[in-house]
Image 1 (cartoon, rainbow, N blue to C red):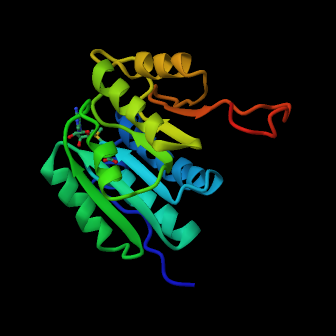
Image 2: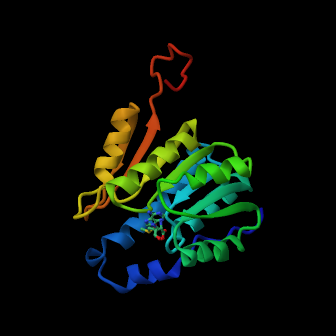
Length: 213
Ligand SMILES: C[S@@+](CC[C@H](N)C(=O)[O-])C[C@H]1O[C@@H](n2cnc3c(N)ncnc32)[C@H](O)[C@@H]1O
């Protein structure tokens, strides 16, 4: 078996180890992502993943690592408005030559991820991770774009599903789930921040052949 680099983003890990964990909800929560995302990549057969909001590219590295570990290949589309964030993802991508990484610069609400995927003939994704702008408007447009770009049996993970001043993530996730009749699971975090996991309804009785409703 080929050697698989361990996910890394030492800025955040150092943060986590150097501070009392209770002082920093973000770091503890980021480590949770390192457990949750590899599982979801495997469970949802997500060999194409989307990432809205790259920043330290910690999640990018987890997604690249996960696809390489599970499929020995994969495609990651990284979206951010910040050049430096995209450069970080590019540097990490150099460690994962089997993963095809696409860097997309832009702002929420312009469907640039969709346009890029169409132009580059990238198929629908198995997983979309949404952690870009946290206002209602930005979070909602990233979530809606994600829903259009995942397979019918794919999954969306929204980070920071918790109430904080100027955060609209909870409202955006709940509206998307209600409008599109999505199943919603919340992975709570002891200090407040959470992941919301969304997928389309599956017919439990198998009346429709276990198809996504
Ligand atoms: C919370 S950070 C993402 C953290 C990332 N998951 C990680 O592992 O480091 C949010 C990122 O979203 C980007 N962002 C914020 N608002 C945006 C918008 N409206 N359009 C595009 N990118 C945005 C920021 O530049 C920032 O890099």
